[in-house]
Length: 130
Image 1 (tube, rainbow, N blue to C red):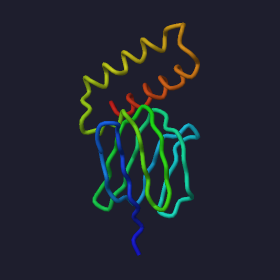
Image 2: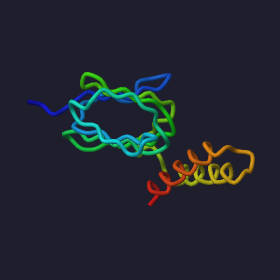
Image 3: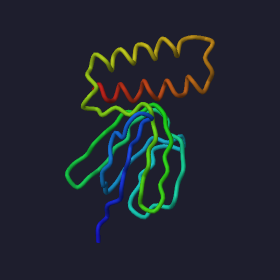
């Protein structure tokens, strides 16, 4: 019996990925969450971080800034406008995003929520850039 389930990442303008996976790790507000086949039904929001998709043929990683997730009947649907495969991010663009985020986080007029999200974004990008 297969241990796979369907994973789909969709942005407003296109389908980014549709595959079968054995495990997916998502960055939710509750923390890193691992999803396996037959996981309980779930709806949650995503914070900045990495989505890691383990397939029988290897692993795919995507950087996201926000989104929602629904898991039901062994189908994981990820809706986000910011999913970017790590293979499409180069060091220069990562450093630029980090610099812009650091400038925003140091402004006094942003909310605590925005600081929280920007700090996760910066930490994730620094991990990718290592």
